[in-house]
Amino acid sequence: MHSMKKILYESRFLSIAFDEANAMLILHWQEQIMDVEEFEVEVHQIGEAALAHRPLRLLGNAQLLQFTMSPDIQQWHDTTIIPMYKAAGVVRLAIVVSEDIFSQVSIEQTLESENAQSAFLTEYFDSDESAEKWLLSHQ
Image 1: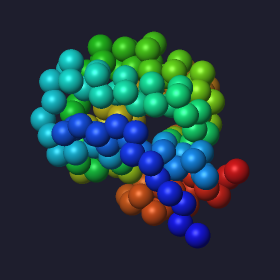
Image 2 (image 1 turned 45 degrees about the horizontal axis):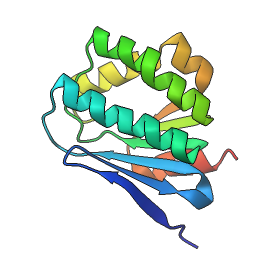
Image 3 (image 1 turned 90 degrees about the vertical axis):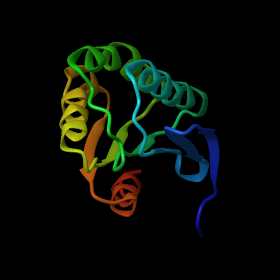
């Protein structure tokens, strides 16, 4: 039985869907160039969606993401967004890795913070299927 995914948010940068049966928030970044403000707005939408729907699992597909998070953005993410995920009760985060090496390294640096590591487990995958399998194999 394939569970229904409800689209919560869509912009030219990002789509956010919620799979209620599996308590999973699913993010897909689009291939778009963003500035810092646009990136922060989009990521804030993820935090808001997490607080509203309280997913245990978060699947972030960053394959097309071409945004490299500067140390400032990484710090902002750590103090602003991670607490939202924590409050929402996220326990596992699966990232489908970016094909852009700079984006990918900045994602890993961001999620290596003590704050992020104490909040949830993070793993990296090369497809939505393998990411979802890992997220669902631990109830």
